Image (tube, rainbow, N blue to C red; front, side):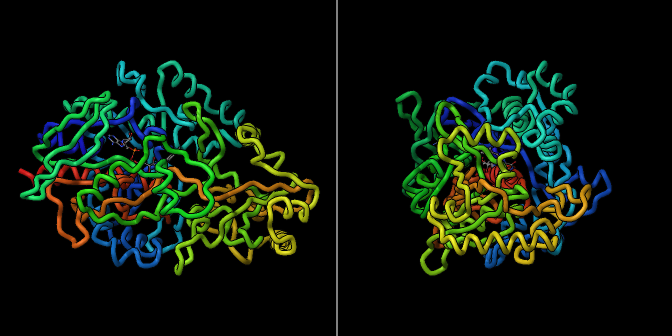
Length: 525
Ligand SMILES: Cc1cc2nc3c(=O)[nH]c(=O)nc-3n(C[C@H](O)[C@H](O)[C@H](O)COP(=O)(O)OP(=O)(O)OC[C@H]3O[C@@H](n4cnc5c(N)ncnc54)[C@H](O)[C@@H]3O)c2cc1C
């Protein structure tokens, strides 16, 4: 949508082809958390930021080796993201507001405690007219904004959140307004339709059409209600088809080992990655994904996952197959730790992983248990740790030692292994400023003991066509495939599994679309 908006504002005639009968994709389902550094909303409140600080942060906070390859794309993202935000607000009804969240690695050079996270203000679905019925809905409660979800915690404290927010919620119900990803996509869709872009649903792109003489992408093959047709694209084609997590074979090949749940729409079957590969594009970063704990739920009648940090309970730890802890349970990038690979084999180092908790998790927010009950046998209980270890096939001595070691840290008030609850992010998330001691720490000693699987769950893969800093798709030798651009989860993302901000898919996705839309106007006249 951001590619379409940029191209149409620049004068191109744009056709958006969407294979599903619903519009909005994963973006519409999302929390809408948007990481945009050096943005005008932060500047307006007096917060300082600079491209140099962002680049320092990206270098320090990203996985080792990424800066060497991704720095040109980071530079493009840092240059264009603030402009994209202003552009989107100028050409759509979408308005963003600052979110209180810090950078997840705020202690790193260039990290910020405030100012880079934004989210859309609520918008009414009525803006879309009859198309509102086709807007993809979420598993998340979209009557709330992202800030309300993270600040008021309606899952942990539903009554308190409803009591505090009821006038806003009532007004949103009366006006059919939504926050988060629905607001994002209401605004983006309204923006592109107002610019005259044509949007077709149930129009699946099946192939890219290549001119054999020039090697240029000249259009697409599209399947509409069983009929195939070839469409010509005068300026170019932007692939923005999302991830490949719902293609079981592709997913298993790139993410070996146990997988729990998927939280994105089932339309993410890697069509863009496959089409790009077929015409000789370099396909990279296929082992990267947005990996996040998910609670079991149902979506469109099928088992699904919904993002929730249920493992971050004071009386719970996360252990791997050896029965030992390997990460702070409150770390935003716990997904990266769960997915850590053996450099020699590419196989998972820690999986299967488990949340181990004591009886106090039974008093976890009622909402947790409402979701937990959706998957029979998901939560296991045993009277002793030894019995629990036997039940889930973990070495009992190692598990007992891990729990005792952790309990020792709790009594001392300090997690000497993983510093749980100490980082800026973890202090923010545990409301440590309002508490005495370290509220992230609680002993595990009361029977019954609990185990919940915590393997890879994903809300979207992040590998695909390798692009340059203009969004142009490249061949393995680095040459450009003329006429073809790629953005979002369909591209080889310069920010991988290790997120540098809570909104480091939506923010970059919007920005890469904007970059593609603008460059397509310049390069292909
Ligand atoms: C519940 C949830 C919460 C999330 N919260 C956040 C958050 O707060 N912040 C954040 O940064 N990220 C978040 N994410 C991740 C984020 O939503 C995604 O990474 C992002 O939306 C991907 O955008 P995209 O444009 O690449 O793909 P999508 O938004 O998925 O769009 C791709 C579209 O392409 C269509 N398509 C696929 N194949 C074809 C084809 N062959 N022909 C035509 N159309 C096709 C699909 O149907 C889909 O509509 C969340 C994800 C989920 C599931």
